[in-house]
Amino acid sequence: MLSSRIFWLCVLSGVLRLAVLWVTPMGEPHEYEQVVIARNMLAGDGFGMAWPYQPLDSARAEVWRDDPTPHPSAFMPPFVPAVATAVFAVAGGERFGIMTMLVLQCLVGALIPWLIYRIAQRMASERASMIAAAWSLVFVPGLVSSATPAGAVWYTVCGLIVVDLAQQVLAGARRVWLFGIALGLLTLMRSEFLALGVVMCCLPVLKRNWKGAALALAMMMVVIAPWLVRNANEFGQTTGIITHPWREMWRGANDYASGSGYAADGWNIWEGERYPEIVRKLDSIPLTQTFELDADKVFQQEVKSYIAADPMRWVVLGIKKVGMLWTVDPYYPKGRSIAYIVPTLLTGLVLLAGLVLASRRLVAERIRTTDVLPILLIAVGMSGLFAITYVLPRYQTYLFTVCMPLIALVADMVMSRRSAAGHELRG
Image 1 (cartoon, rainbow, N blue to C red):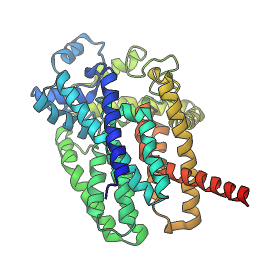
Image 2 (image 1 turned 90 degrees about the vertical axis):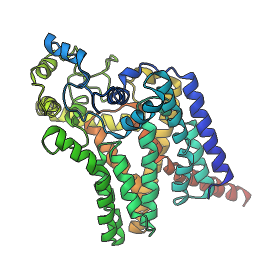
Image 3 (image 1 turned 90 degrees about the horizontal axis):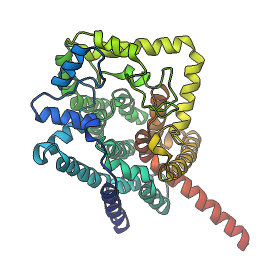
């Protein structure tokens, strides 16, 4: 049951998110792939987009100008663009429709304190759980995530729901089917869960619940199967959730790579003016059914060449990315504000302490302590992912918020030490 304190935290969460939306400029909505795909769908051009680069070849550039979907596309996971399409179908695809979508995101984000509290309550005291829930209200980047068309708040909330259901399943609740559905939806928001989700489906095996694990996996596959079938039909071959995994790796493994999505001088790393040779390779790829898959192979070759040239450089850069992920991204141009640096650095350090406490607890009590395991799996899996790709603040926001229940462990430790110190003084 929702307590009055958590209810008002959720109300305040929604109000703060709407306030941030009110004072935050929307920027350029056409720069968000989610908006582009939704607009193309409503215009009758299909659920896709042109590969986001500026061709050097004049004939190719003309095609890119005249045709918004010149090739089959699965450039983005489908969930957020599908939500945008549904909203735009009712409210239009211009400013009013985008604002409607963002208001919806603020309402969805209002659930975050409640989900954090539910998860934390199984690991820590009531008071500590309230502290963890309230922390989400002072984590400014988390509030901002509702105010951008990128839609990070959707997979933040879904990630927390996955952790909540995982804890219930490990406690013996008969919600394995719902757990699998949630993992499927999260996979349609974050493509890496095609692998990480399969691992999490195996959690019931820890309780020797083989049937539960099979059911979770089956339900996850039922949810994502239509998208995978659609992609196989579009590209004429088996294809994952997205078509550009190597491009994601390339943005963090190139001559200008800093660990961020931005170079040391603030340049947004993409296949543009600093990489004309890559643009020419993309221009040379025929606009066939497999264009996006063929384009990604260009980045696959670039990444392999970069690693082969200096493997240790790539390893050190990966370690740097993990460090940036759990602290701050110093290369993000908009991230030099104190409103980003202070809450992000403080939250990251507290979460690292929480991860240490959770790991110690898991080792000390072994398999009996499973409440912390779902968060640890996500934290480790996502850290590994960003070690081989690149870091951006919105990715930190998602990961930090999903891990925020661990703050309750830190709060309990601090309160316990203060209580012990006070007892000694009284003694």
